[in-house]
Image 1: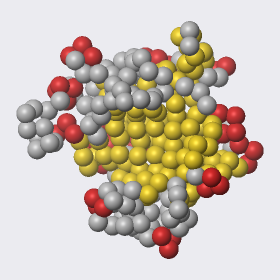
Image 2: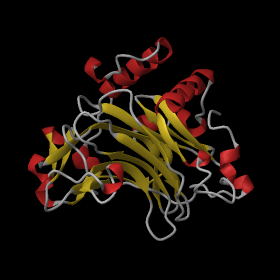
Image 3: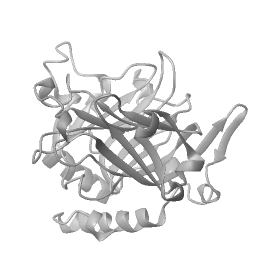
Length: 294
């Protein structure tokens, strides 16, 4: 697992990163039990008795899967190793979503690039069918060399995006000032690998090199410390440990977490909708007035 950990983080981040790798080693959901392959025929495979899942993409199709359960708040962790080599034009996703035109959604998307150029990690939040809350980042490691843990903490106060247990983004519940926030719609976990060479890499200028196919992304150590939704039930723990380990229900950033968030956003953020005055000439969205480091 040590090869999964960032090697050049400031000392403030090193302990958190090592802890994330150790925590990741103790996880291990069963893909056979917890997920359904939803498209892609044989391009999606569950291996090693349910401990590993791979998605692949060729010129004919990509592939994807979703959770059998729906969740209403919780912490979701997934270890992913992204497509290696020339991944330009490909998009690998890991997200929560409900259904319908007024759906809620919490996104990680990984936009591929030519060999030697960094992936773009795209994040977004939808509520009641409306998104447009994008933040994008480069990563401080090569996400194709080893597995790294990508996490979503979703409670009634905020959504926290984490990479190897390092917070990269916080989206607060600002319903009090009229900003929709996902609180009522249960969501499934989804993931997919697909071709998006009309926009994914340099705005579509770089196309997918099909001579490199099949492209493959790998998943392991899924963990849902979350409330499983069912009609008439407010919360059923996803696992026996979920009741005891319920810190996510009020999870926020302490001083150390705010320092780590600031480090990531100052060094690795490449787009923030809250600073895009050209996109919002009539004024930035209301939630942008709150400091992103809180």
